[in-house]
Amino acid sequence: MSLKKKKRTIGLAPGTLTYIGEKQAAKAEIQVINYSPEHYEENKVETIAACRAYLNSQSVTWININGVNDLDTIKNLGDHFKIHPLVLEDAVNTTHRPKSDVYDDYIYFLLKMLYHDPAQNVIQHEQVSLILGADYVISLQEEEGDVFDPVRARIKSGSGRIRKRGSDYLVYALIDTIVDHYFKILEELVEKIEDLQDQVITDPGKDTLDVIQQLKHEMLFVRRSVWPLRDIITSLIRDESQLIDENITLYLRDVHDHTLQVIDTVESIRDMLSGLLDVYLSSVSNRMNEVMKVLTIIATIFIPLTFIAGIYGMNFNYMPELNWRWSYPALWLVMLTILAIMIVWLKRRKWF
Image 1: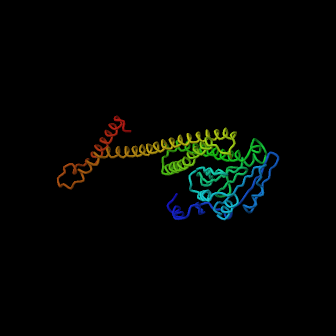
Image 2: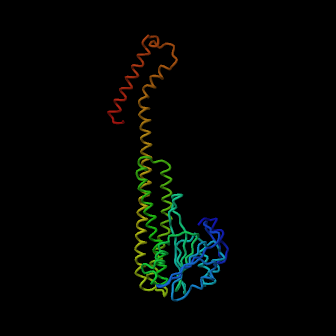
Image 3: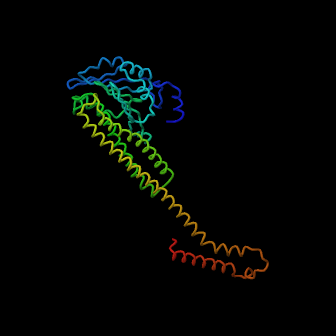
């Protein structure tokens, strides 16, 4: 978190809603999906109060809110669903590290969703907050657009187990989708690194170094996003909660395994980038050595010729050979002979 952003929260009472982030929606958009094995309904509502009508113990309600910068909507969410002010404060502060907090009536998850921006060719990130209740899940995002479309499609089509399970399975599916998307991001990073490997050897320019530094920065953020997730899943597996059924633990173990695979891949990619940077520095050093070698060879060849030119550039009155008719061509002959001897000598020493 930058110091400038940090100053905005200094001195405020705990639980004070202050949006800290860069992505801002004009107004919060609220989408409600209510489903059961035999029922499916999807609507957009204008207020948080309208979401209450969908809540019942016979179905699962997924409330997705895009635009956490709309503090009035977030405050109304806390009032209607009895969400602790500290949870709401974390939800609107998009610089938090991933974590989970267990409360009496709900569990709060804070995760980082990663996706590739093809326009800028960089990895973008967005904070996602998930609130798991007895028969509902609330997801809070910075702006419209996420990686949850496969989950929405499964709910709508009724395929798989998701319509037959409760809200705990839904929150598992959302977390699993975020983790699976990490693999896609890492695959794209590996492809970039493979493209850079040849470029680092053949043409190690400044642009190549900039790309390597950008990838190292992106991997640092990915690592910060993934490592806490391992502890979050571990705590869900070990801690007993009435909101999470024992049957869901098996699926959480699967997410935990995927998280460990992501962590291993992240560490491998970081090692690859460190090795790539070493290769870049070696390539630049080798190119510099080749340049210095050429300059040294040229200087070595012309040292004796410069010596001769220096002698005959002196302004002495008595230099007998200067009056000789063939002195100029003779001097050229001597200099060319020395040049040939130097070239042969350097070749024998395998300087070039």
